[in-house]
View 1: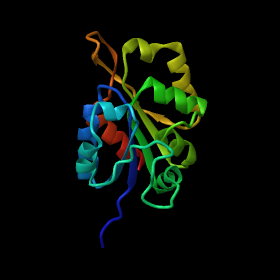
View 2: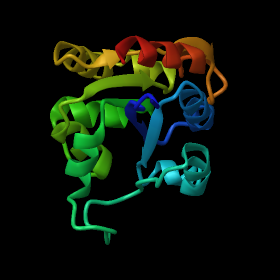
View 3: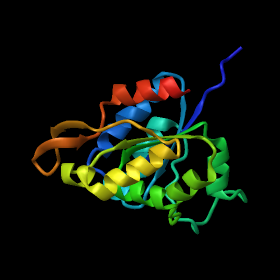
Length: 181
C-alpha cells in the first residue's frame, strides 16, 4: 500500500532568495511531500511559474483573487482546505506584515487566513528590514498566534552587506517541515 503524501502549500514571495525555493521544492518532493506553489505577483518578476510547475509536477497558482479559474471551487478556500502545512519561503517583510495585520489582498494572504493548517515562515530580507522594530513586532505577533518561524541566517545579503537576513539553508527548512509533519 502506497503511503499518502502530505500536502504542503509553498508560498513564494519576491525576495532575491527565491532561487533557493526551487531547490526547496525538489528536496521536499524527494522526501515524499506533495508541493503546490502559490506565487505572489511580485515573485513572478523574479522566476517564472513554469519553473515551479516543472519542479513540483503541480499547477502553480499565481493569481489575483479575481482571475479566471479552471473550476467552480473558490481557490483560496480549496487550497486552504488541501494544505497540511503552509510554508512561506522566502517570506518578505511585506507578507509578514500583511499576515500580522490580517490583510487579505492576494491569493497567498487569503489562503493563509482561510486555513487551519500549520504555518511556517522563513524570512529573507535586508538586515535592517529584518531588525526593524515593526518587522520584529509582526514576527512576535505571528509567533503568538502559533505560526512557526525558521530564522534567517547571517551572510552576504543581496545589497552587498553582511548581516542577518539570508534565507535559512534549504536543509534547515526541510528539517523544520519534517518535524512539523
